[in-house]
Image (cartoon, rainbow, N blue to C red):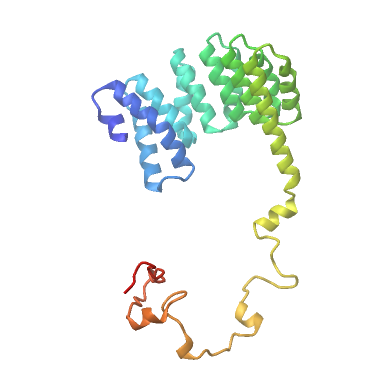
Length: 279
């Protein structure tokens, strides 16, 4: 994909390759790809942005993809696209700002919640759900009542992601909407918020510490430098060499007789006896 994005003679193919890298960049940033792949993807995407001879259509898709990595290196490209005066660039820059998850872009995004273009308002609404907090909920009241249904639905999702009591109140007011899809999405959002609240109440800090092992220490025992053998009294025990099993876990006598002990990390148990072997 990186080679296609940088080398294919067709600008449409290069743009499509960059667009596909949006998802892979997110996986890389989340640690789901090898570090070398993350470095390669980020490097190639920034290379496209820095290529003065590349078409804007390809650069904008690269901007959307590389935004998953965030960082100061991205800042000038986001600002240039946002202020370029081109609507496609504005839309891509807002989308990219949301993908950075960096709250420093929230105030910039809020400015476009009332943009003339529906596509820009939609992207701004979705982005503020990723970047905003409760202080930005009042700015979403307009999108919740937007004349365009897609913007309304985006606003419901954004309010849900921000969460909190104020968010819940804003959503409850939309239960009387005349638009069935609005009511349905609001109901789903409120249910999801309730489930999250219930989970927060059920999982107490004490339970969380216990689940992650912090509460499993023994009273009066300093686990720093803990030596189980000395503490439990078997440090000086000398086992009978003939009883030491160095073949692996659950080794069978037949295996030792056959000389199957390889003595390496792949030393595993023999498979169960074949029930169909009548010999």
